[in-house]
Image (cartoon, rainbow, N blue to C red; front, side, top):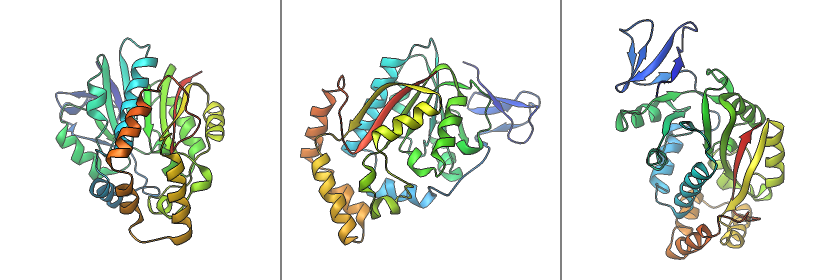
Length: 286
């Protein structure tokens, strides 16, 4: 599948990703591993990526459940013959293999972090990766069929504009798959250290998504069964504000019982779970 990418420095030139390189269609000598458009370190950093990889990793039951639900929605709501998927916030690389296992998909990875994107591009040489800030969206309208933003929107101060730009990126009836931390009232030191601007109430999130030009196909929550315990942990954090809060919270929720509860929860995908630790939405461009 051919996909044209605008030149970062020349609006009249374009690249195609061929044989593991971005190739300038007007200048055959210009070949790049990664296209760099813009960055934004306001809501995330390379240090945070390294910390999450070290403290939480890719096998935490919450994140495994998140990736599986994303894949479930991709299969259930995809009505495209060939699905061009843009993941915004791919620095962990944890979702790539899940998406590439789905037939008739063309995956594009993106993030605001240059170092992280370049590192992951070395690992997945046959996948196009770009560095860009969605608030400075360089791509034309109708660029892709699906936009995935898992645990990204809370790191963007102007989330309203980010949703509108995501809408522009999508073709008609395109899909937005979105995950954010739930429980507006539970914002605490953990969120501050992770550079979250906010947590979300599902009702408010749905309104924002609809106002950005989407119709919600499905809305649900992750972490339905562990939510009562999660509330107690968050309230404890608010009161005591202990050190190493990210490591402690990650270790507390990474155990056999939590794994079992998420396994049970995965059997309830046809239901819209009314609460949980993360809001999960699949919406379609109007």
